[in-house]
Length: 358
Image 1: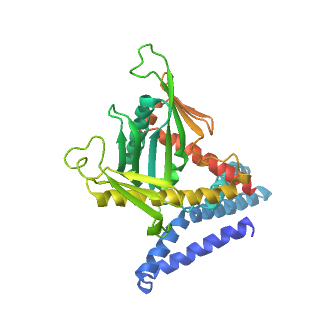
Image 2 (image 1 turned 90 degrees about the vertical axis):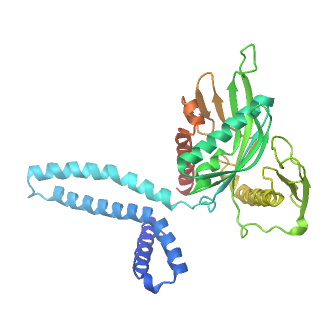
Image 3 (image 1 turned 135 degrees about the horizontal axis):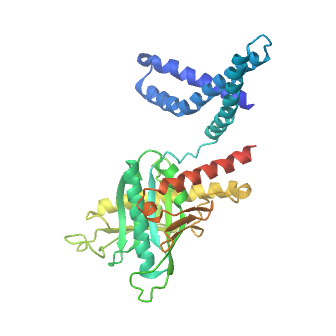
């Protein structure tokens, strides 16, 4: 099917949906909701296609004026200027349409499970993990997303050994999926008397939240242990067996949750994390099958890959996958300038996928 045929079909379907939705009383509520979502999803590309068709029509009109020997000189000068303007607009519209025609990642619209863990570097790595976790929390707040803590293992000195949160909102996974990988920090630790710069790291994993329909977990495949919570807690948190550890025997994935006082709540959170990890494991397996022709893609999901460096002495953040450096370290860690990196990563990914289609 040619590109023009694809575009015609999109507009035809968009018009069909508009007619169906205008007859609201004749469509049952469930079907109406389904059609409304499809209509909303198609609106951006349909508007681009209509704009492209209009621009092509206007270009044909001005070309006819320029070809008309009887047209006066002033009209031709105006037509010439309009032709140049339209010719500059056409490639941009065509590019936007091609991007919107790219296959969508089915997980993009899902909520996400964020996992941040201290890597090499001892207490300094744990402090950096806490910095990153707060960065994502601030970013989520700025986006109007819900950020719910699921599990937290602290060092007692302000650092995090492990921190897990559920982030809910519009297109959360689409925005955060390229954050998975090893994040490196270069700075002078507060405990370093000689002022030497240390390098440490933290790993970030962003997993699409899985629904019950996405992953089937058999009870016989689970081993569930309860134990007494450790670390800060107070009251009954660390005086009863409220902490839960779930082992998924076939995959050997182990999830612990002790943030809640209730054993049932901890179990529910642990199951949500387990489901997300199993779902991501299956996505990674399928992606690996397709990755032979996309070795250089962004977001391979390899947690051993060093993706970004935060250099405090120079006040810079460098994303190594796209060679992007911002001298806005404080604003990035505040969640304010993180969009600049994420937007660049998404654009690079789209460009790579477009090049494959050509």
